[in-house]
Length: 111
Image 1 (spheres, rainbow, N blue to C red):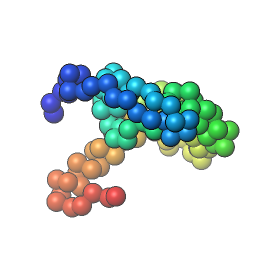
Image 2: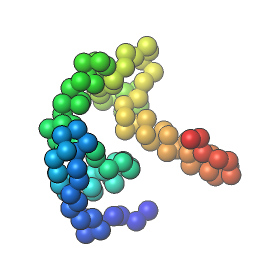
Image 3: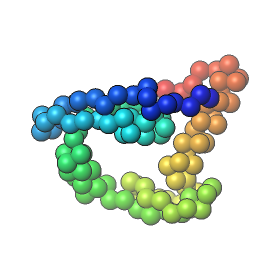
């Protein structure tokens, strides 16, 4: 897999869907999104994103877990029902492994 160079990205001016203000989505932020596999462009400026996350946290309190695979502590937005739970990074790795096996078998990936 080829490494993505920051030079491929340029700062972008976006409009916040909540307050309507313009904000800059920096090269560094775009690189972070790319590295994490995030595909959606931010819709909110940082202050509005923080307000939105705070509202979500009130509705869905975060819970601490210990990842079954890597043993690190992590927060999840649901109440765990067992100890058989993965952190976000390990879960993503498991999904990537699953998708690779499905593709190698010539089957369609789940949507």
